[in-house]
Image (spheres, rainbow, N blue to C red):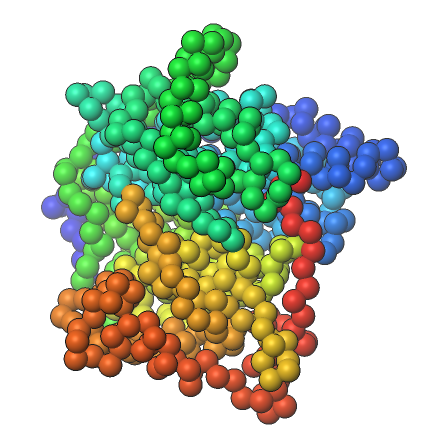
Length: 611
């Protein structure tokens, strides 16, 4: 496929404003962290007090090794500059394992950092405007924003400045330094893009009578028990954005369960109180906030709309993929274009998605990507996505071949970023205390196998997703996947075996629903099971029916009457042979987890999602 420059009407470069990095970090916090590490080592600070302190500053204990930390870097709205990527690469080589990990909440994590080195990493991050403050702990976590915000043709306006302003407002704000549990805020660009129904506060930008505002959902969240958020009101003016968010946070701080850690997220409060009562309390609390808020507090909220000039260059187009038909034998560049590039609403510009393996990227790849972004992105930055990839926006069609070539030099040109081949996987047993299975490695194995099979080229599989968590807590967001998995352990033929509970039919967006539990699958049978499901779908589907559509019909009992798979029970029966394992004596590897060559053990430690 040739993309001809002459048919595209490019805006002049004067429309682009250089991205300046917001300054989120503070040098003095790095000094305090280093001093408290020394106090802890000398026994002058208790383990519980130190745990609360380091979590508030973004240092999470590594799996079964408290002398090491996972450092979680806040990336508000997912927006990151080349300079910041280069700094993360340097810090990873000096203090971590030579790679970084993109999480499902637009954070970037560095694993296995010596506790005494954490302050040095923090100091390096401050130099490029980044912070780890409140990336963990019982605070307002990283504020997310759709990576399509500003380029989506269905958006009413760009929500990015509002997400940034709210992130700035709550960072280090006394109102949220000791909440009952972590608190999450997600901004969408439109009703289709953004995780707004699975957040404590989810916001969709909209206009009413020419006024900017939001449709706000409250009380959503994923975990061992998950809930979809409730609509607060049809329209909340931008003037009431701060007071509404403050009201919700204050209510949660005052009424949230501080005794039972298993039930102290805000979604439990909403569920137990009842939505109508909670809704009324929010409206009343908002009035109290608006009557009593000080000017000093209000001045913490600073909305920067100066960077939005390029967002007005719209051609009214939708966001289709460049959709020339490809197959497994197609030219690698065409295959990449097919699944990794979408057009923006700005005439002549494209979003390029950089496929990562379960969110992992090496230091050398980070440096190469930083250089590529600086050279080819009109806005001079990237956004990391909830699917653990990077989105580079405002790339000209004529630059796509060179962009691809630069990615290929460092192994970043894999296809499938916007297909089910790009499986999401949390860090699992590679670093997390709560994980039971190696979800991280399984996601990589799925990606490798599906690209090998060419599943990234099949359009009927394009709108499906695979998401994997290493335990029921849903860091991999398995409940909003077309096919989701969460890790556990089962005794099979007397042998402890890593297994996954499989779910069907989860979706995100404003109409998002939670997946339905189907069956347990041994870890080493997950890939054959997904392939078998695809085979059944191919036999049973109707014309123009995607895998996601077929699974939705299967759950709702609306499949064709003359098919062999009329409901979930039929599918489960068809999968029984696929999920069965040989004896442990004949094939001991089948009873081991991915990435391990020793007997499986469901060993966990104290979780640090809150402390």
